[in-house]
Length: 264
Image (cartoon, rainbow, N blue to C red):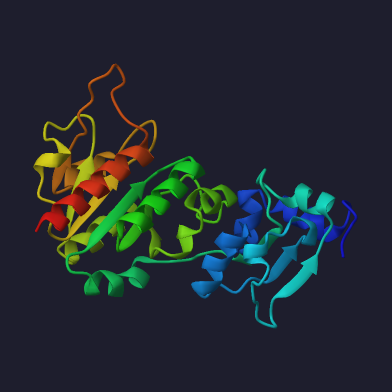
């Protein structure tokens, strides 16, 4: 039982909130019993798991780990110092960071008929990226491609906002040019969301192999995506604001694809 706030292991976890530290060590933090259960089901093997008996909830008391995982009990005060959530449930793990390439998801896209892909370019806020992963899971998206990200997939807030769907949806990281080339080679149409488009998103046929592409919160999609996309679409806006939150936009577009496919 670790009870000291000055314990080196505790200080190490706190330092892992910094992206540069996580990337240097090649690790991520997974907090929450539900999120950790999904990670385990996806084959993630945590190196270390911190458990606070005082905070445990009965539904997740029975998580099982391999002998290679170090399990450490900590006091409530220690856990609350390490935790980044307000509603901590007593589980926090250090695990290898996801390193996924386009090659990793290509077999998935090859099996999908027709493929539905979400491409996210340059998103800065981890909460938005996590929310889009959660939506992708709910909509049955075959893969998510994260291009030129300003945040990392191992960010604790990505894990939190995704509710663990980071581990349930095939995800790849790539440069925009490589992603465009790969989608073209797989004959997957790219549909770029931009307020400057003239075509409404509901007027486009999304029943075939399609990649829905959304851009950064402030600047939207890069010129390369807009220039090379198969079609540009917009979401009609009746108010004074000219665009929606990127996670809300992605949800609308994905579920339009789901609606069209269900109607067949």
